Every structure is written in structure tokens, then in C-alpha cells.
Length: 162
Image (cartoon, rainbow, N blue to C red; front, side, top):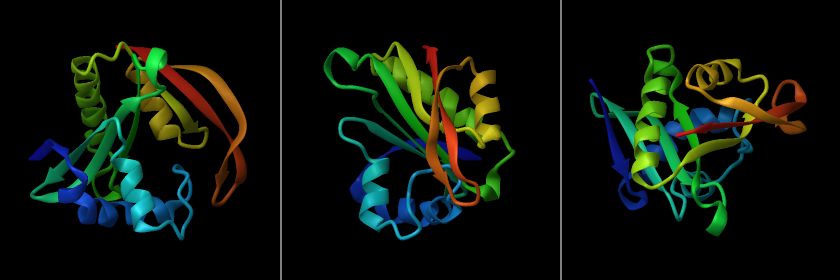
């Protein structure tokens, strides 16, 4: 059974670093370079202000997401989020479950909408999920992401009301 709980940096840094080794090595969906330091990766997943949630299967960390304001002050009513699911459990609905959990959390934190600022165009699985969950593409950023295999590719800005 998958359990989703709020995480704290001091308690979860080593587990997050372990999980994200796959993410860093992948080079096709996240901006981390292959030589990214542990501190850089862990700090990304524990934003201030913001909250982080982890998913565990039989005690093993298999997914993570973060919520934070997309902008401070007058832009603070729109949430930004990032998600990662281990390849070991992909295709089993965990991404959708994390997303739905994040929508509930975002609403409880007072957010009125959610926006993703850099959804890599080649990440078709994520784009399909976000569209199924009500997100629309509101912009394209040309050559925004340096894909490990394809070079510079476009990225989407995606948005939905909560």
C-alpha cells in the first residue's frame, strides 16, 4: 500500500537523494545536470516557502512532490508543483494519485490555481496526465530545455484552476 506523508528535509534528505539519483541521471525531464550535488537536489525538493510530500511503498520512497507559490506576494495565490515517480512503480497510477493529493493540499494552503512552468515537450506521459487532470497549455517556451539526447527542445507552461 502507498502512503503519502508530508516530509521534512532533516528527516528525509538521504532518502530523497537516493530516489533522485534516477532523476538526475535521466536528463530528459528535469533541469539537474548529471554532476548535481546532493545539496542542490535536496534543496530543490524542500522549497521555502513550500511543502514537500513523499510516497512510500512498503517503507521505500517511490515518489515525491513539492508545492510552493509560483510567485511571492500578489502572485502567491497560484501554486507551482513538481513531481517525481520512480521508474520502478511508473504506470501504476502513482503520478495521478500524487497530483490529486497535491490539489487537495494546495487548496488547503489557500491556492486558487496551479501552474507548471517547464513541462518538457518530449515528456508526453506527463503532458497526457496533466491534460486529463484539467491542465491547459497556456504557453510554449522555445528551446527551453537542454534534453540529454535531443538537445534543445520546447517546454510548456501549463495551468488549471483548483
